[in-house]
Image (tube, rainbow, N blue to C red):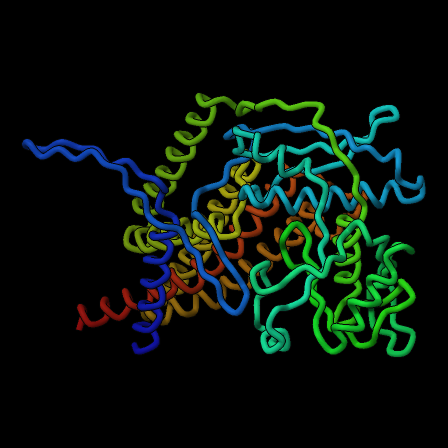
Length: 456
């Protein structure tokens, strides 16, 4: 009973946290009753904190994709005429990486940024779901990346890895992207560990030598667009215009850092050639009809479970409600940009969550028919049904992995809508396993206890 009480407290905490996170923002409250008139807008706060240099900020608004909420479509032409032909492709990829990072400032975590070649023109195509006023986005995206090497103001803070570097606690050394030539991932010849090798421009090598001589034993912070991307400690003066950035890097991290450095070192001008506001492709009427259809379908499932399984069905509905709150909360916290395929993945996962309960309830009926007690039948039903639930969901998760294609394999889907469907379906399956096995089982154990005491 102690375990059941503890689990009930955990479920209640999850329910309250999910209710707070999933609650719409803002929510208009308007009603009139016997002379009492209320007409106001309730706007609950989001989540924002900064811990040991890690910042987390979410406004907890649901992000909708272009097909549901519309957005903006921008096309930039990149001027690579002054870039060596061998470096043009890497320059474009670096510019694309910079733009992807910049558009995240607008909360567009699943924007579409891709390069395209039209004749002799190199273009960068950007889609921003939910962004209608693009003036700020255009100004930010079109700006050349600013790479700045800065020294830490206070040496005591510099030795503390937990300190979060900012423009306020650092100052510029005067060495910028204009003095930087290129960076590439490599390996240390002595230790064999992944490093980042870089080169300065010949005319700037003396400036960099003076800076690194002065800062031996101290960190040299590297800022891109005003944000810190690395802070390597200067081991020895770098006098030849070439050096290495070492640390506890993986190969992927060195490639990412080299790309970030190059995106600030390669000043590719971009010019806006197309800008348009994209209306929701489904239209407001179609979206509302989809919501109504989803509510009708969910209501029918609830009625079926309650009518056919009675109290067991009611407990399953409670578990389904908690499942919905957790799912919506995770959508807002990640955040997940919802599109129509993503909604389809969520609805499919709801059906699979109910399917798990049906397997458990039917197995429990079989155990009761052979004369077992209610509590024993329940425990046996969960144990026997788990194998079928596990195998079915494992097979579906394998399909989700293929559709999501996290390794970006060329022979598999890489489109956003397909991956959006995979994300919501995969999250739904994992959450349904938690609610079906933990939440519903805890509620049934408490119900079994109450049922036994009532009969006694």
